[in-house]
Figure (tube, one colour):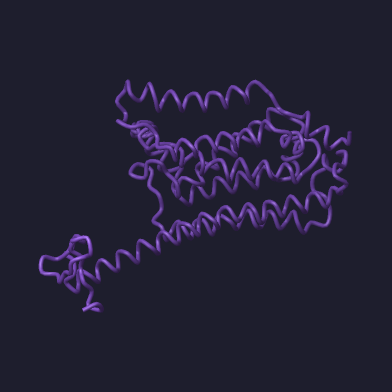
Length: 306
């Protein structure tokens, strides 16, 4: 059997710390949003089905990144596989995790004045942006990157900082408690997400256009799938550059269209109020002309239909 297929079939990472961590995240979510919620009276209702689904997808993302052969491929053979892992940890997991959390679940955490100040400071958009991108670039410096491949404790610490700063980076967009840890206004979210693409694009371009491999362990690694160390590095740069940016741009696009739709609806409501078809609260005006629909219900007649 070719070495590549041997790795894909056998190199599963069943480290107890990872398995226990995933079990704690999953079991803790079920317990906190179920029995403990009912006992403490945090909320009358548990998480929505959408929140449960997104949280489950967040855990699946972690499992893909840390348990599957992707971990061994990235550590021992392919820089490009390692970049897929890094994208899962920093770009895919954080928004899924945050969207899966009910606000009432974490609302008590920053209630203490000092905790509230720290949390607000760390989740300010400029601070979160700077912390995440500084951390991400720092760990990709050749000396530090090579060290993580030979020191497992350092490698684990790297992943922990990716997860922590990744969550901070997405909080201005998907904060579960916007009244305590505010989200940016929608126009600012669009700008923030656009700017968030740029450091990753720059780093990906650096890897893609480098004239030689930057990381010694991959030069010495067995060549899987017949690609050279330089080609592998270029592929890793493209993975960071294009798919990584597409996530930000996809979220940006959704937020943009929601913002435009709601802005248009608000403008239409104001126009109707100005013309006397609705009151200031959006309800039909008392003297607004009406017609009777086929089922007997009253509808507002527009000027154009009169």
